[in-house]
Image 1 (tube, rainbow, N blue to C red):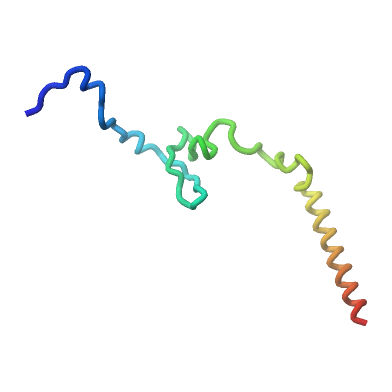
Image 2 (cartoon, rainbow, N blue to C red):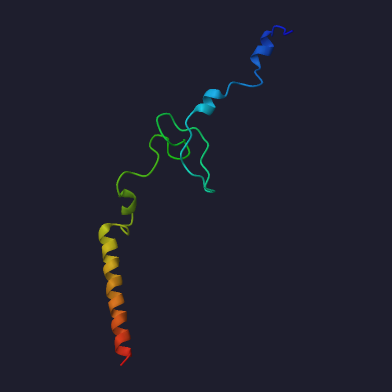
Length: 100
């Protein structure tokens, strides 16, 4: 037989209903050890607040991060590739000369 609960007993719920929280979509990010992040995703997003779901999080659009020093602009990358190509040709020429 069950007895009626008084107000004090009703205020303390030893097992709150966690069903809606557990049914929330989960973050799709991977943790450093390769498992999935188990935090709930931010409403309307696919990531949690810690993995980029917050408003304004993440890098700026485009290539703006690379332009701080200019090292990773298209022109700088092309110049380094050309320099490396010229160095390879020079080393090949030196090896050919030293064989004589």
